[in-house]
Length: 292
Ligand code: SAH
Image 1 (spheres, rainbow, N blue to C red):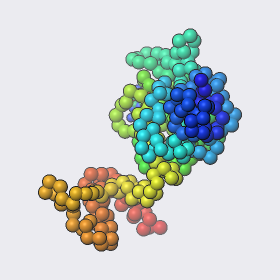
Image 2: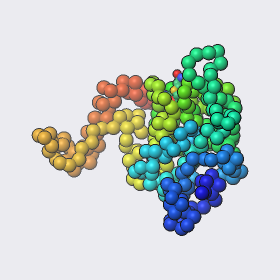
Image 3: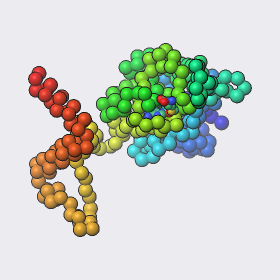
């Protein structure tokens, strides 16, 4: 049974005896997505996906990946090798016969904390063959204490060579790991999840769709919410009238100038009403630009 981590970085031919499909594995294209088996087998000195934006995800639940990222546009892009995903199972790095990965919090209190030594080994493995320049390859920890994820961050991550994401569980991770590896904490929002996996998939979805070729229609990332600091205008499609509700007339007029004006106006109105914080920062930026 092949381990994806030891496979050559060559794209398997469909349905050849060595292809993941033929071996009964789930194929996501360029590489097979499979849980790692032995940490040693993960050791590699050369980047396996030269030139391909790669996400390495350290998790106790590698089978949760690619999850929803295996569907639709991100899934197709993964199959087509436009990006690569390498889930790294934290469990084999655990201590002792039971491969313990966590222990009780120093100073007491409820729950368990992921151990620094165990995480350290997993991160070292993930980073082998990867640039040490964190600007090109950040190490992220999904965490409610982190900076809230926004479109600008997704854009920055998409411009990197790839990234390593640490998914927490239980009470989280030993703080020293975050210091040692200059880990950037990223939050999905002001709420608490049971683990970092869903947050990691949300972050990856937001990032991967910005990679060249993933959406197909490149224009669609330029007009959507947040790209100009505004929320998106309302959208409509057929039927022209539904339950007595017609599509706004201007959209049916074919007059592109008027349509653009209407959309801009609606975007601004929605942003003012729903997100006064966004509206305020947009105005501040405009004022600063004006002052230059
Ligand atoms: N005790 C921690 C919460 C731990 S929740 C605290 O109070 O801050 C368990 C794990 O879920 C975390 O380690 C983190 O990886 C993930 N997680 C929980 N909420 C999250 C959020 N809002 N954004 C990103 N990751 C989150």
